[in-house]
Length: 62
Figure 1: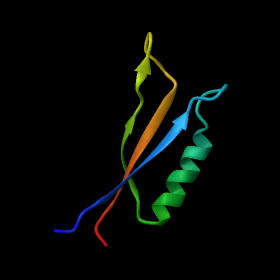
Figure 2: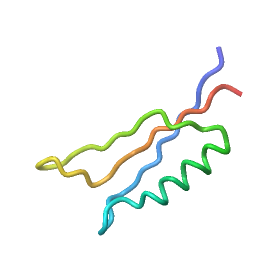
Figure 3: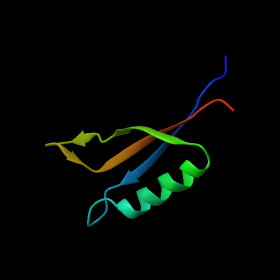
Figure 4: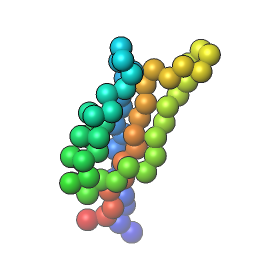
C-alpha cells in the first residue's frame, strides 16, 4: 500500500493580522509540487483569541 505524505505550514498572527498574501503564495508554490490543502487548525488561547494557525497539506503516493 502506498502512503500519503503530509506537511504542516504554520503562520503567526502579525501586528495587522495574518499575511494572507504569503499564505496564498505558499499554497500555490506547494500546489505546483502536488501538495493539496486538506485542513486548517486555528487554536484559540485565553478568551478565544487565535495567535497562530496551521494549514495541513497532503500529497498522494508517487
